[in-house]
Image 1 (cartoon, rainbow, N blue to C red):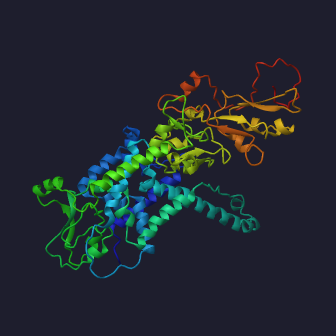
Image 2: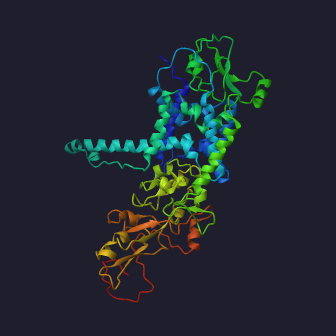
Length: 554
């Protein structure tokens, strides 16, 4: 019986844990025992840590584990890439399925385009220095979370729903009540083609070489490589080597040189595949042979980095230039209230989102908040809002309302771009204000009785009033009670665009402090009304029968 390598076992366990935590990222938020955050894997991504800390000019405390991983990498090499990275495991699976057969002959070592990942890293860090997060373009954990959370999870839900519809007639005949009434909600997300083409393109590169992304393009791998140029525990070959070349042919990272006794430790991911296949058992991973050898590791300068100074400076300058160009795009305008703040007039951010500049410098577009949203209202933003906001989360009330008691989006955000608010704080985190389009409203424009927006508003921010020129009561919005949750827009029966819409006007976004105190200071009355309470117009002096339905007053 063939023995399963320890690396494969660890890969299976970590990928299973990643998918399990991603499944738990939902409302109500559950955690396994002992408590593990649903965004645990996102917190271990070195690119998310480095890019976000540079972009926000702050140390993100929730990402504390990454510096520890850097120290471990200096000791035992790039173990994270071979064992704990869900994207790396997914690429290994793709390699097994679609990679062509490897040639038997011995191949010469070559650096190839491995330096591209360093240039990609410099581009992202250059943009981060200018206050723009391009982390989502290359972060392996952000890519994996978007792929499994926004594509594979909805696909599985759709398959489950189709399966239930297929067996429902049979279940009805057999009187299996649990199957007759069982149903599955299918979340739907915009811009799925962007993530699908990106990830499937990475998988397809297996036709070129194994782990092509990890070797040549992954900026997170470049960061780990900088800390593993010669780890304390590394690949060593004894005199028993017969120079068969098998380790060179089978190394997934092309880290073994023309002489199999030498290794490019920056590229070695410590998978120990060469140890398992060596016919002479001449390879092992052990500590440095001497103190001199260990000190030499600190002085070792990588010799295979083929990019020149112009490429390095050009990559960093390109990132900074893209950031500045994105900030000057047409859809954004300067905020009059907060000088220097860039805002888009149509973007409604999730409750607890930091001020726009801080939000975009921290948001890594991982999609975890969108996966966790119970009403599917959080959707990725397209290029209509410019590259500056591309794929960041936005509330889409016509797709679904923002549930007042749900605070899952902030709980699963790894960088604090969305603050982890308590339910009491979340209720008072105003994200916008509803206003009525009178030319579309059934009551205002067509003199038809409609009470929908008033009935569904959890904050009782909408009230009806009789006007001399109106045949039916017409709705008004009390802005001080409106939190912008979007229940009114979602349930509005008017076709196409709703007759009442939410805009980010008067949105409350704090970098620090309490939403409860802030909303009270500026005169907001944001509370969930369990019973219907009418709003009395202070200017109205009419008394007696108002002609409204029972339970409604002016």
